Amino acid sequence: MIKTVLLDIDNTLLDFNQSAKLTMQKAFDELGLQYRDEVFETFLRVNDILWKKIERREMTRQELHAVRWWTVFGELGLNADGDKMERLFLDNLQDFAVPIDGALDLVKYLSGKYAVFTASNAPYAQQVKRLTISGIKPYVKGILNFEAIGVHKPQPQFFEECLKALSPAKKEEIALIGDSLSADMEGGKSVGFTTIWFNYAGSDTAATDICDYVVNSLSEITNIL
Ligand SMILES: [Mg+2]
Image 1 (cartoon, rainbow, N blue to C red):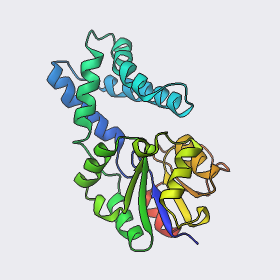
Image 2 (tube, helix red, strand yellow):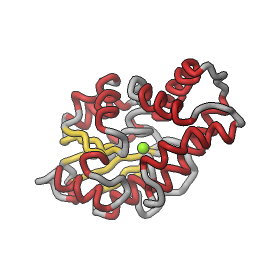
Image 3 (cartoon, helix red, strand yellow):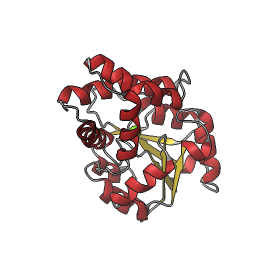
Image 4 (cartoon, rainbow, N blue to C red):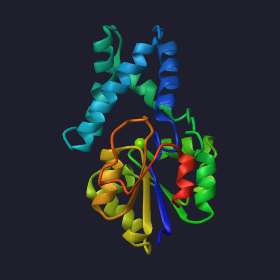
């Protein structure tokens, strides 16, 4: 029987893609650069490749910050300072928190039945601010993240530390909801949580054995929990 629900934040509760788009538009303005849709598409592609490397422990977070915008600018043929853009991007990202459809209703509902926690690979202060802006924070009992734990999802150690923090809840009593098959579903399954995959990107990937449930909208979760 589930007692505790662990929620991923980006592209599960908050729309990282929309927040990132607003952030880069503002930063481009400040740098006097012309924003175009291709910037966002290129960023998403580069960011995803780099984050997958972090998940596989082939890259550190510091290395990502050092190369991310230089790579994006390089691919776009833009002569601009990638370090400056990275700093502006990180500084401004915490001011944008666009909730996913139904996110606030979901956490209200879940917090009435379960202990609700978040589990994220993003910095603690940034996520506290974004959860506050979006009105979600009052419904969350605790924010578990890579800074406190020292490693990123999907490393088993991340989820083992979550398990300790959620004690006395046992692994059988914990459900994990997230959009990433690699970071959330694979990681959560490896320690024995019940996994609910939120198909944020509308992917046609068939449900795999690492997902106990698959939902295409957050409102469907009330049929499961
Ligand atoms: Mg996510």
